[in-house]
Length: 365
Image (spheres, one colour):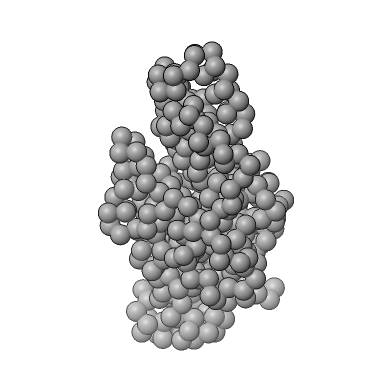
């Protein structure tokens, strides 16, 4: 059977202990298909080990054909480094994957993206802010990219899907697996709404701890910048932020309460020079969108006020903090009866202005 470009890229991907930039150097030197027909001596002279040279000269074509078949079985497209749809921003990083596996709309990969990442055990306020900012980003023509994890990642995808726009989820497993499994409905919605699921891992690959940092470099590599909403000091979100800095991407961070351990990572990033943001304009002002066409007009970057805006001067609402506020504190501040406070808080909750949480109420953006 005649081999396709996909066969050769998968064969190159399979070579053990050979850095991606060295693999790309070999392709540039010999050509993709021609590389696999080079004499042993020439390959050894390029610094390859005998085992690596053997893998190039005698690929396991049966295994590679099986990977292609598995991809077809899970409705997965294989995108190679030389394909027109391969993301150009990703080619700029030190170790771009030679092969991507995708489900959904590949053309999103070359549209302007902003990555949103954060804590898996996010606060209600963090989740609400993430949905809000993601929804407004897609209205500006910017794709929201994240990692399909619990918490902030999921909120970013959900926020982006509230309009007619789509989102990109970069995962750390093969595309025949959804991790976490509770996000199967979210994956189906992303694909149904014209979004994209992306992985560099072959079908059949399960979730392993070492895969998530590798996934994180793709999330930042695909994007113009990374927004960290909530993160502890030791977290995968800070790994993504570090990848972004190494890749010369913008880094944004949302400040929070000094008493919230999930804000410590964001505060650390801001101290290191990350851009503090609390509204859409803070992001738009920093992104270089000049090389992308068809974007919405971003001159008016502030989100327009809605009909509920006048409620924010309400004395009762002003008595509820953006951190959990006990009901007795709200009563004391507003100087209203407990009955009226509870009734009006319920009304505010229905309007999406506050949320009932353990210990009291939380004011939402």
